[in-house]
Image (cartoon, rainbow, N blue to C red; front, side, top):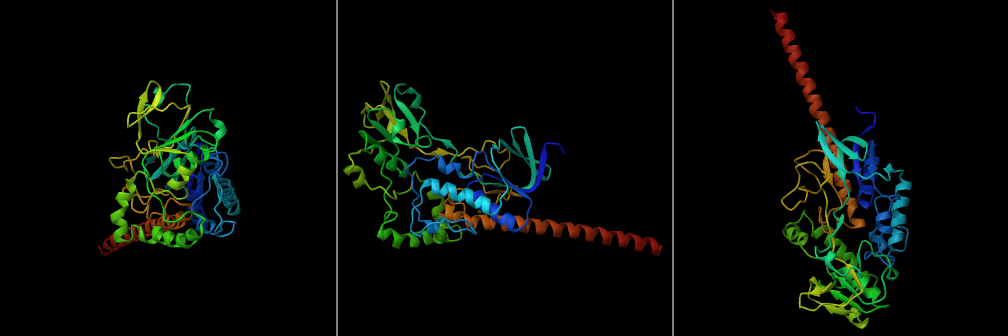
Length: 387
C-alpha cells in the first residue's frame, strides 16, 4: 500500500447535514471512518448563501440525530445559525471531519474503493457520497453575450445588494431564490423578475396558519410522498422532473406591492448586448442575477452507476450494482423530505444499517467458506484414513 494511502471501513464524502448525520450513526456503530469535505469550516455551504436567507422550516424540523436545534420550536433559523449548528454538531459528537479535502476521484480497486483528493489517496470498504445534487451553477449559454458592463451573478454568488452597480436589475428564475432576491433588491432599485410562477404553498413559514399546517406538510413529505407508498412511487419521477417547487414565503402580491415587474416569459437570449425576453422585449438593465438553479456533477465518479441523464441509479441510496456504494442528500432519495435538514436522519440511519448488515453478511459468508473448507478437509482426511 502507498505510504500516502489511508484505509478506513467507510468514507463519507461531504460534510454537510447529510454527511454529518451519517457520521453520527457510523460512530454509534464504532466504525473506523472519515468524513471528507472541501470547505474551510463545517457549515460553510450555508454561510455562502445570501445574507438575509432564512430557512422555510422551523427549528423543530431542523435537527440532526442526537442534538435538537438550539432555538424555539417555531423559530425560522438564519443561514448562519444553521451553519453554526452543523459546526457545533460535529464538535459535540467528535466526528472525524477532514476539512480542505476536495475529492476529485472515486473508483474501484479490486474489492475496495479508492478515493483521491489531489495527491492524497484513501481506501475503504464502503463509500457514502453525501454531496447532494446542487454542484454547478446552471447559467444560460448566451450569458457571455451580454454587454460586459452588465454585472452578472449567479444566486450562489449573490450575498447582498451592495454587490450590484447602480441601475435596474433583472432576476432570472422565479422560484423561491429568485422571488426572495427580487423582493430584497426592489427596496433599492427597479427590479424585473423573469420566469413562470411555480405556484405557492398553502401557508407562509412562520405565520399562524403555517404553524398549524407545517406539521401536516412534514408528515406528508416524510411518510406519504415516499418510495414506501404507492402514491409516492407514482409521484417520484414526476417530482424529479419539476422545474421548481412552489413559493414558500414570497407571494405574487408581495412582489407587486414592492414594485417588482413580473415577466412570465422566460429570458430567451441577447439583443444588442441586453437580455432578450421571449416576448421580444430587450431590457435595459445594469445587473442580472441568474436564479436558474444547479446541475449535478458526478463526473469524478469513475463507476458505471449512472442512467442516461447522468443520475446515480439507486434504491433508497443503495447502489445495488456496486455493493458498498451509497448516496445521501439527493432530492427524493427515499421521500420528498430527503434533501431537507430534518429529513436526512431516516436516510442516514437506513444507510448505516445497510453497511452494518453488509458487514454481517460478509462475515457469515466468510464463516460458511471456512466451514465448507474444514468439512472438505475432514472428508479428505477421513477418506485417506479409511484406505
